[in-house]
Length: 80
Image (cartoon, rainbow, N blue to C red; front, side, top):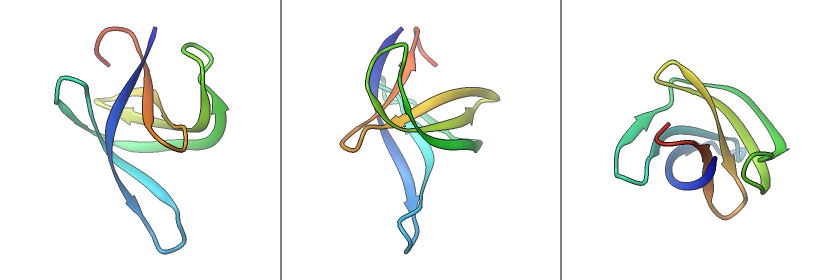
């Protein structure tokens, strides 16, 4: 596993609620987020770090997307 920093397109409402809409991978490929399943503060146990963990579904697969307050990252093998 490795920590991969990604670009995230998101929507933020007037109350400050953030909803990630898509993730752009390090090779430039853009992945639409099908659905946000859960949001909570959590640690990235496989690669280190903490932040707000979004459990998201991308291409039918669940994965974690982390907002550490400054940058967004995912725990990745090779690709998604």
